[in-house]
Image 1 (cartoon, one colour):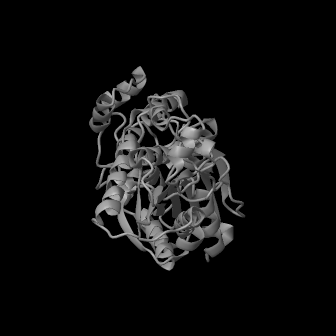
Image 2 (image 1 turned 120 degrees about the vertical axis):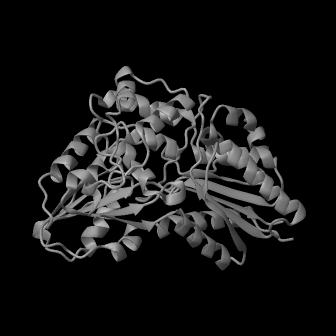
Image 3 (image 1 turned 180 degrees about the vertical axis):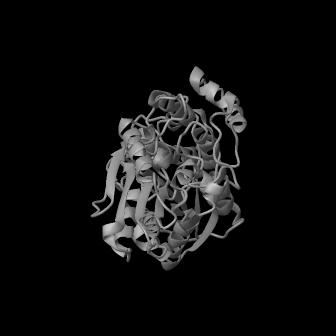
Length: 428
């Protein structure tokens, strides 16, 4: 049995989180993946929370002639990074806005009229689904906003949400790469999705899509999502079909995954080893309802404490992935604080356990709060303040709960995004 001061464990948790974020910084992971300069022009396009930082890293390490370099990438408000040759445009996330719509049209214009001597660098990261907004045939921005908001509330997985998004877009599901033909396209990806499937990172604007409009309709029906009439008509008619595998326009497309959740977890694991503890990575792609994942993690932690199985304490349990939240309450929440609060409720003050859950992009839900920390006395402190932990969970009020305790984790814009990070330190 070991003991540690709570402040020491909080500091260790934060060092792990910071290491995970640092490992996913574009300045570190992008340069080794740059292709050779082309004979013709180089056009840089992109979308995502990390796209501006990726553009800066590209400029800092590009060896081609800058007079033949141009580009535009779209990032979330507050995530811009100054660049010299690539324009950075900011737009809304997670629900798209008019700024994103206008920027997407400009991206479309940039890749028109290219030749086989030209090179397109696509910088794609999490958040691109909302930022690269280009409504499909007959749809409006309002249609996309309505469907996107409904998907976010539904509890659908990120793969399911992005399947629907791909079939309502003029650029996703391989369509952007098809517009670049016959130029060579190299896509540099930062994964924020379980399994790291390129089709689900920003809804796959530069990769072929094997899913169909029928698949999108099945997802809509599964979650009882109400669609505007013109949206349903687009899907039912098949006019929203995406670019399929084998399409000749995508023959010159190359996709390179430059960093992913597993790499971030491995960086955190090294911090744990340096602290003299044993890390155990449970998985980089845990999915499901956030509160259910929290309860499951609590069950594992309890087994470690009470029976030394499957791991012997002291140790640290690490995991990543992207959970979902079916919104039923009126609280201020996000999937990470929902998971953490469910973990705390299930542990019910079990001694010797400290935890952190946060989004590596610095935003959990729609709040500028990355996540929170949980300590063995979190529930007792909450009760002393008149907070009811289970009621807060039922209201989807994770941010309200942890902020009242002073346990929110705030990073500011991290300029990257490799999904959720969870760490549980078990001392006995």
